[in-house]
Length: 469
Ligand code: AMO
Image (cartoon, rainbow, N blue to C red; front, side, top):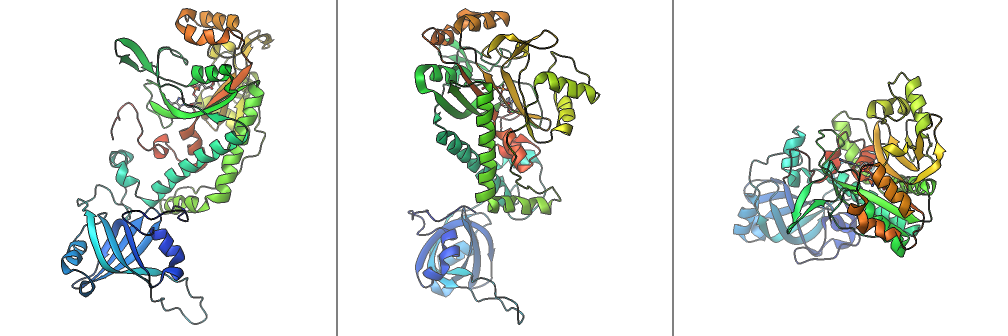
């Protein structure tokens, strides 16, 4: 449940449930108002036990018809599970349960003896999925009813953890002098290849949804912001139906001036190390909630093992040799696909970087160094990936900051420099060498939480068959 120390009173409640649960001893005898979802409503006749849940905890509300308006009592008693209810009453310590002699007494528990209340909104019954009772339902039903799925403790904990991961990522970058920026999501030209764009009409002009903040984070750096980051949506019209692809995903990007590929790989590993360390230090209760569910489902528990840094660097050429020696069918110049990654992961099971990809396999904005040739004679680039197991987490690299080379790269990749003048013009007035990366947030969360599908860690995923809710 959420940390409740800084919650302030609102029109609907004087306290959060978590505050009463944790500060009950100081509140006994005081009047409080709380509001939440009705988990269970038990009792007959003139007595009712209502278990209320808000985002911070659970508490029992005890209702006696004699102590309140009888109509309100009847309304609450006849309300359905998950209805939202507000009650006002006096905090009392619950009678402690009997324990055997010599056994330690459990910590005191508190309840609210209700004097008034109201049903704020009744829930329809039956619920399309169980919130507190574990009835197995498929992912599609869960996603169709995500607003209810989210009320389940482990799902709620998962999204709290997601928020923490982003918070820690931001923290580390801000400490290192990066500032947050936002780039436009309606764009005129592709940065990551033209085939997977979502076209749209921008009034009378054809435009696209942005695949990446790439060109804009670079322009911000050229403009003197020096170190920027962005956490924002990226759109890809890819016809994949896999556990790790979505058509809209959150990309966590950085870009830094006076940096090369190795510099930004170091930033990335420090950030991941910081995220894992911070989760391990601060968020065990979220992990415990998720693990409680995993244990009930016989799934492997999460254990937050802080990865050692530096992560191994396996240059592309070496990676090809590892795949070949593992029996994989691959040649220099081929993409390293998931089944190849499995062979690399046998040797490097944790996070590992794959730097120095062939230039022809990397986008036009990647740095082109004519002196960097592979043994095959092929041109190498300053582009890298970060992988974990069979999955790519990140792509990045040093960027081409020399405008003539940049235009050459565009031509080499059959793109027209005149379509990119809004970008290339930014390089005509002095451009710092710079580098950056883009990390798939959902993929990183899959590693942290052991989720088998990105949809588990994305609130309202967008894939080929889903645009609602
Ligand atoms: P790239 O296209 O490799 O690089 O994307 C960066 C990272 O984003 C994630 N990702 C996805 N996640 C879910 N669904 C998808 N369809 C999807 N596509 C990509 C991956 C990937 O590693 N501009 C460069 C980054 C840079 O060089 O700074 C880029 O976008 O985790």
